[in-house]
Structures are given as C-alpha cells and as structure tokens.
Image (tube, rainbow, N blue to C red):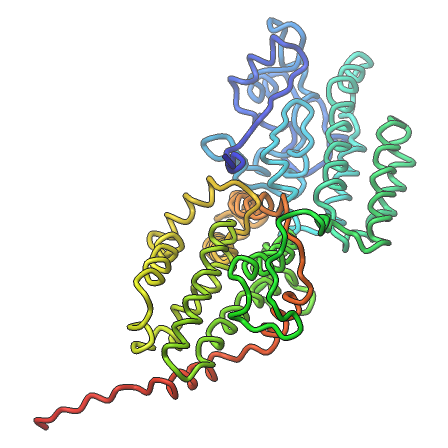
Length: 495
C-alpha cells in the first residue's frame, strides 16, 4: 500500500549528553535569545547573572546540577521577536535570518522544517540570499569576552555542530533542490568550499566539490533533474492497429490508446518542479513561468477538445454513440492504471456543454456505458472537495498520475487565503503558509516516480500529437453541437 509521507512535524532533538537529551525533549525547542537584535553572535556580550537566570531554563553542561546560566554563550542567536511558534512548537513565522538559523541549530534538528524550507524558500528569498546566509552561519564567531575554557566549550559544543548542519543543508540542497537556473551560484559555493570549509573539514569540502561537479556535468549535457526513460523493450507488447500508415480513432485499441496517452501525460507530470507550484506561477504570463505545469494543463485542455471534436465529427447520432463508448473505455483503462489526470480530461469532454446537451445522442448510449461513466464521475466527483478521490489517491499503488487540477486548486487557496507575512508583523515571513504549500508540493513530487513501463509506439504517438495540435476551440465545438441537435424552441399553443 502506498501511503503519503507524514506531513506532521518530525523533530529530532540532539543534545550533547544523554542525560540532557531527556531533559530537552520535555522543553520547548525555542529558548529566549541572548540578543535583542539581528546582530550576529560575534556582537554578543556577557549578560549579568540575573538576566541569565531569567532567560534560561536549562543549559548545555555535562552536569545537570551545575549553574546553567554559565552556559549563556551556547544560546540561540536570533532575537526573541524574530521567530514565532505554533502551539505544537512548529515554526509559525520568522525573519529570513532566523529561519536560516533554525535550519542549522547546534542542538536541535527539525527534519520537517528543513524539508519544507528547502521546498518553498524561493517564494520568499532568492537562492543567492539563501546561500549567503548559510555562509554567514558557517562563519559564526564566538561572543566577546569568553574565557579560554568557555571558548573551548563554545567551539566544541556549538561552532562545530553549526558548521556540520550548514554543510548538511548545502549537500541536501545540491542533491535534491537544485534547479538549472541555480548554475550561477556554483562558482560561489565552490570557492567557499575550497577556502573556508576546506580549512575546517577537507572531507566536507571534497563532498561539496563532487556534487558541484556532478551538477555542472548534468547542466552541460542538458540532463538537469530529468527522469530516466524506461527501456522501450520492457512492458507489455503494444496492441497496434492493422493499418499503421493511416490510423483512425476506432481502429485503436482502448487499452493501447490509454497506454500511449499515459506515457505522454506522465512525461509532462514528472517534469513539474517545485518552483512552478509557488505563488501561482502557472497563472502568470511569461515564457519561463511554470512551463511544465502550463504544458500539462494545455495537454488536458487539448485532449478534452479532441474527445469533444471526435464525437461531434459524426452527423449520425448512432455513430456519435460509438465514439462515446470508445472514449469511455479509454477512460476506464486510464482509471485502471491510476492515470486520473487523463481520465478526468476525457470525462470533462462528456460533461462539457457541447456534448452534455446532446439529449438525442445520450438517449442511445447503452446502460453499460452510462454506468461506467457514472462510476468514474462518482470517484472523480467534486462533492465535498473531492473527498472520495482524495481518499482513493492516498491508497493507490504507484505508478500513478494524479489529477493535477486539484493540487493547483489547493495551492491557489493557500496562496490567496494566507498573507506572505504574519499579521501584525512587518518582517516575519509566514512560514505556516509555506508549510501548507510544501505539503501539497511533496504530494505532487512523490507521484513523479516510479515511471510507467509501457512501450512507445511512434505511429500512435504521432497520431495523438496531430489530433491534439489540430483540436478545435470551445466556441467552434459548441456551434457544431447546435448544428447537430438544434435547440428545442418551446411554443405555447394557447398563446
């Protein structure tokens, strides 16, 4: 059974001694900061003892009975007002600097927060800003006036761990969240790895260099993050029409047509990148905005138009019924192979005004075809916000192509219904909003693999592409529908 990744906050507190780990798990991960500004740690000074005891409820000492205030220099560096938490201790919002610090805390790792941040950071900052803050974090300087013993503790218990966290975030970003357009930042990262990081850890520097080289190779070869194409020799044998030189719709086997449509649809769906799902990028003009999402939307619209046109091409109602039956079989085959996106595009043709109004045609449709379509409508219906479909999609075995429209609807509600900054704040990024978006994006991503293992039939693919490219617009199709079955004018004989 295929289950969604747990979208609940997953945290892993890490402390320096086993005794204190138990103690810290009972405490909130957020402790008051030493600083009252955005100043880096190097500007921190030793507070008075009363202030220390008021600010800290626990410390980092190896002996729980020690006066914890003496470890003030192991506190967090962001100011108390720079970050806010929800009741369940997840991050509600914060300044960009505080959020980056949260990614790289020395004593606490929140894996869910890290994943959500890396998925969505492009909606509230640039990659350059993000990398610069990571580099600043790596160069964290000790507070002023530390004694030699305190400096040794600070170096061992904080600086080393912060640097390790920064390295892990950089590595994670290069492996899983890098985009082709980030190529410009690779030189800066490489220089940082070969100078600053190399001084403290040659092993870490070499790992980053290896990943940077790999990214450059992929960019140079046009590889990017593209998925591997399955070997065309695997999968079931295609069911090909008798006349491959002149393919007609009713000569194609519904199962094979569904397979070929699924190959095309999955290629589009698996190419969608997280950045395309942020800020309703697919709804904005511009050739570079959400290209893959737009192509997927265009595929569905053209397929709906093709199905509609193929039905309306026939003057005789009986022939229209034969085409409706054929497409309903294709839709059912798509449903069987968990291709809900193509299935919905076909269903949309039956339910649009040009086809739905053909009463004489639908009266001739067999009860078997009608029942089949009713079953699909029930599964894919929008009742109670697609409740039945959502339950089904969370339990299917991949491969699968979800109905993209529902994700775009969810992302639109999140974007329009939540402010970018927390209310009553001028600089705290609304991270709760980003977390909601990340949950949707994560679900989109988890269905992008594994791929379908079907053999491509070039002739059928060419036929499909020709039909999609020559599909008619909505107005033309509706006029054609009116020609086939004119409106019935009600006349009142008693008038």
